[in-house]
View 1 (tube, rainbow, N blue to C red):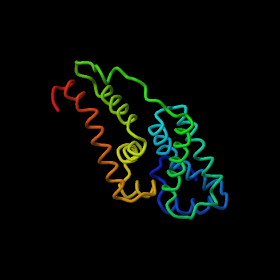
View 2: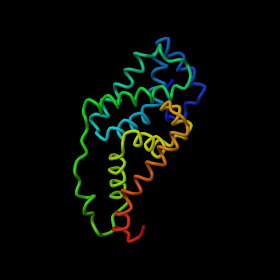
View 3: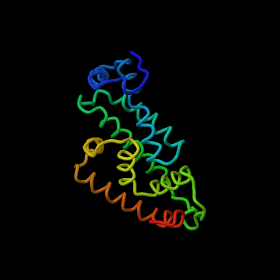
View 4: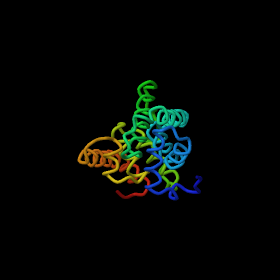
Length: 188
């Protein structure tokens, strides 16, 4: 069963594939991989802020999905796969002990108006500097477009904690980016 787009795979097919995966079905693994490969890869890339590490974490995530398939309880495959991805990324962060590089752009940004691409780059750098617990909720909400409820399920935390983390992350981002916006555009 091959699909052109992730949206071609409905929830009923995902639930059946998740149950069949427990039995070791290669086709079920293919369906689930096809459905979740892009969002999981983007999540790893944005959380780790390092393409090589993200490639490794992404591959390891799906290896673990297959290896631990019998531990899946049959509910919320999306939450389960993102939990595995999250834990894998945290393992990479712990072993790498990533350092934030000094970036002169934050000290002396260009005074001329910047294009959307440059602003996007500055936003992504600001997100990369957030504490991991804030970075992961921002990535899941703003880039992967998950609802607060879905984020709570993926991270296995209370909905209220998701809201708090997103709010605090946005405040930190606003604080970091406000001087740049003021300097570049002359407004707040």
